[in-house]
Image (tube, rainbow, N blue to C red; front, side, top):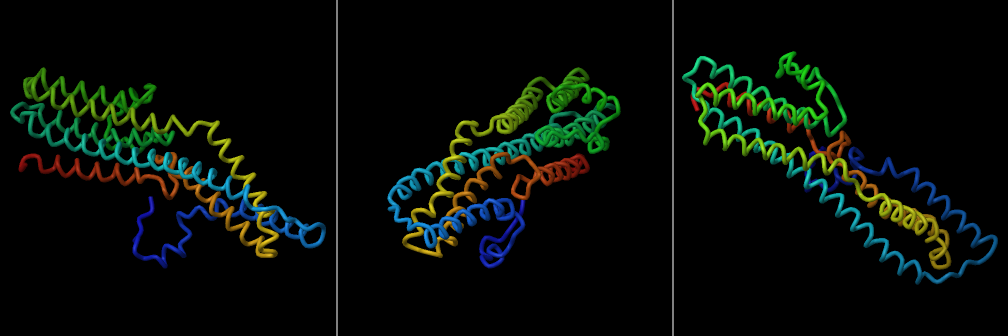
Length: 295
């Protein structure tokens, strides 16, 4: 994700990082060439005197379809952000509650707390890697033992397996008498929230915009942009080349923005900063664990 100052309009106007311009420029060039050909035909071959009414009507329908497409993509983006906010809250709640609920009287208390904190730190990293189709075990070696990593490597869904490890750790605390049943219920509720958040992320990633809608919109839009110079050339002459390119820039750009934010978990400039989220969770949990005796 790119952080920016919304009030610095000049910098926003001139910046290219995070812009969709570079990705759509070749297509804009094609539409400009088409506008040029139609303009040349108008001036040197046959006068084109087609009324713009059909394109005006179709343009309204196309605009509504593009707005719906972009709004749907942004809803997915924002839902992804809310879900990661829930992951952050649940891991922090588990960390704070474990300090409060797991008694420090037993000789194994500190060891079990430390294991719990390391597992909690590893969870968002595993979620991030699953959403990005990554498998970087080295990123986990600071938090997991070789035996735990070996178990995860054999798992179909690593984050779910890690939640099972956290549950097992909590039940070990219950068995040792350093955690009571009512407090375990509270901690399990937070674990259920983590599981729900994971499911929400996987649903967003695995359920794109329906192909039929995406194909129809793209074909409809390209046909509109390719033919709109026909409706402009009689009124605007050589300016049709510029106006045709501008219309294409507007419509293709809106569609490209929708495609860009549709999957919020990738590594594109406008995607959610999952690495930052994981780093913030790690730093928070390390701080809580380091100060557990004074809390």
